[in-house]
Length: 105
Image (cartoon, rainbow, N blue to C red; front, side, top):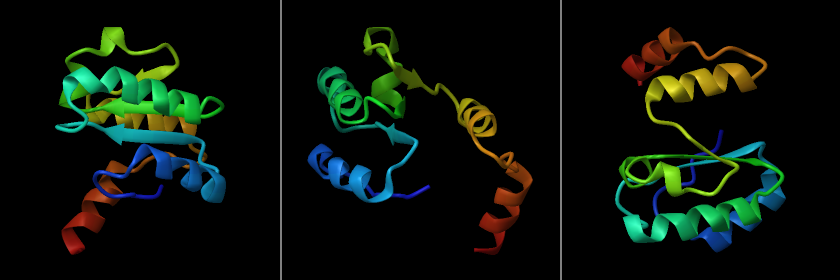
């Protein structure tokens, strides 16, 4: 997993794709892009990562998920994210381990 920060331009994602060749791209959209721009953003992500998985979450996504393009996976809750990671990783996600790490950091 690579954290790319806030407000990364979609155009920069192609460079990330070329360098790291991720299996999935995951974006949490809370304020930007706006609700009116989320569909276009999702379509652009799907276009750039058509052979990868596109995962979206956040308030702007959850308020209109039925309108999102097919092929985009919406994660409603943190439990959905944990389940997704468990199902798609070689090592199960250990929430207790994450809690221990975050408490010592």
